[in-house]
Image (cartoon, rainbow, N blue to C red):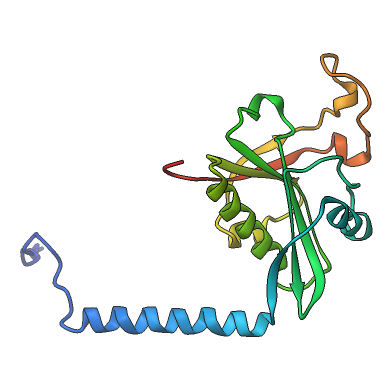
Length: 197
């Protein structure tokens, strides 16, 4: 049996096609057109500032398993053609160990089901947090939720199996927190870390 030797390849930089730069420009142009088309299809989604009570009213009306919160550092809403279709409320982290003054947490986010609203709100909350000087923004979702909106906004899954001990049942915390069925469920922590802050 005769063994054939394969021809020796020259090592080094791979050859770049002569129209490589043109292909890259065409690809970038197609991507920009796709993004513009998606934005047009989404309608006139617009971010607006909200008072705390306005955001809490929307949470009361739309949120599946959480009630309004007592306080927030910022509340923003999303409108489509002038109608409020979603909101986000940010505050201090629920976990005291993560509350070092440089972390902001999205405590509540609701939407009426309009496409792209959660991703837009998560992305805008992250942008505002970065501009305010925070080093990181985070949020918790239930373990059985997929986190598609967070992925779409560029957030990263940081931890799974978080929580599950309601604050009212902890021995080192004062009572007074509302305990619901969701309080004892495990959650995922998603975050976005800002470089340079």
